[in-house]
Amino acid sequence: MTDRRTQLAENLAQVEERIASACIAAGRKREEVTLIVVTKTYPASDVRILHELGVRHVAENRDQDAAPKAAACADLSLTWHFVGQLQTNKVRSVASYADVVQSVDRAKLVTALSAAAVRDGRELGCLIQVALDAESGERGARGGVAPDGIDELAAAVEAAPGLRLDGLMTVAPLAGPYAGRQRAAFDRLMEFSSRLRGNHPAANMVSAGMSADLEEAIAAGATHVRVGTAVLGVRPRLR
Ligand SMILES: *Cc1c(COP(=O)(O)O)cnc(C)c1O
Image: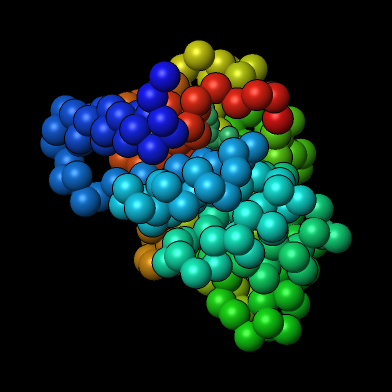
């Protein structure tokens, strides 16, 4: 049995190789893609090892797990991304440790995040989560605003004190017209990103791609990939 550090180092090296190959295949520079390691369900000790191994971006999807973990790792220079569906009653906690909230999908959340950021004297990066399979006016099964709601939400973030509009995020849909068509889904997100950058040039982050589909995301033009399982192993419980 190998120890945890060796295991994580090996997994990280494999993911790094996949990212590097995908960049070469897409004619992109390696520096154009940032790896975010999704540490959900794994302990703070793993975050610490990952930091030693050079990881600087981590993501969590549940405040109950993330808040104590971020506190336990407060001495490390890490950028914390929040990527889960977020209820307004958790916003105050999340805003105290998160640097970027990738799951902004409704106006109420913008108002709450803004109030929390102002209260803490912090600036919070925000990504609009897009549900590519959601109908107009609805939200996706796993969160996200329907594509025709992006502009309004982006304007709200831009106007909100304490918030910074960073770009777009998506999770490839499991159902609907994009099911099993990750590349098409990520290409669509890139179209929305181009349009968004027309009005908000600084909002150039495109967060897409996970363990199973990071190559498709990099081919499409993603700037950030969110990788959990391929680095940390299969999670004990599905969340
Ligand atoms: C868990 C999660 C990931 C990572 O998924 P893996 O398949 O484990 O790489 C990425 N994005 C979000 C929003 C997640 O919840």
